[in-house]
Length: 81
Image (cartoon, rainbow, N blue to C red; front, side, top):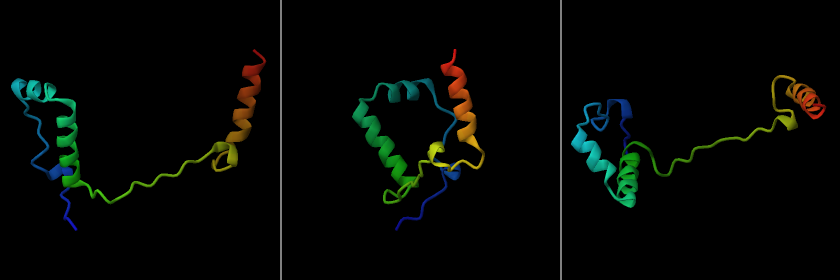
């Protein structure tokens, strides 16, 4: 298991790019750029870690407010225009 360094304290974060460096990166072939980005990303993020997200439908009642009533009211006013 890797010990991951916070990105903010990384020497990879720079704000002093020269024009020649920017042009060189811009002119890289796409797959070379993707490969470099992947290597840098893996340096700071566990490749086996999965970002979990939940999709929430407002129609199923998962909204803490009464969103269904507001959406229905808006829908009916739009339909009558």
